Image (tube, rainbow, N blue to C red; front, side, top):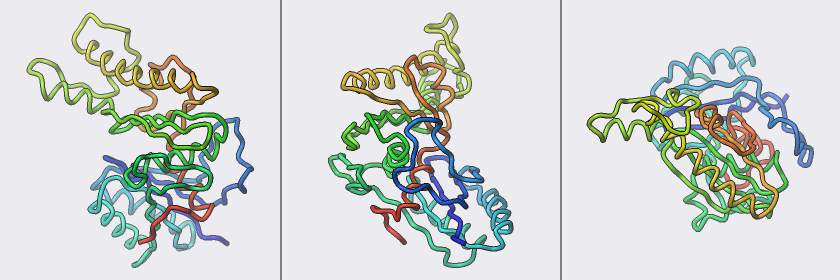
Length: 277
């Protein structure tokens, strides 16, 4: 019986993971329509600095799998200290020396070409998310929007080329910057944005509407430029996606975590563009 896979997406503020016991369908079997899949049986998350949460979550999965040691695949944008903490947690749960495949951005994966000026400088989360998106949406251009600590917009052309994108502060960063750098404006959280009116007659709602409009405006402006070139899809992911979704007027699909989906694809296909450590 094949070993399970533990997929880990280490973001700027949280670590997200998925536990997969089933194999990915063979190449070419991915449906271009229907909901984007979540091909894992268990998933969870923890803030950085909360190893006890991971130990409890993963320990239960280890016991249910009769002590099987998983194949571990990781996308990490948070640096070496967080990577070391992850390795320590894995060794505690699954045994010393648990092997990890640390994914890196590469010039290409399968038919997807990395068109970044320096492919190695592309954030690994953006590259891995694009791999997951392209696997299940193989036709037309893609606009991949990830609403997290930062909001990233990434473009994959109809010719299977990652063309680049935009990076802007996420909702919480925008709201926090206003609160920290002005004398009179209140502190708000992303959840306060809700479904805001186009403009507001009070300061709290004006802040929420302004930040949400900035996020949605960047997405819709990019979408118009991409859709003008031909058929295109917009995929929306990330922890703040539901807030942004309420403000978008163009069609889009949602997925919980395209980075984890990309890691699953890479692990199942043998992972060109990886770096074991």
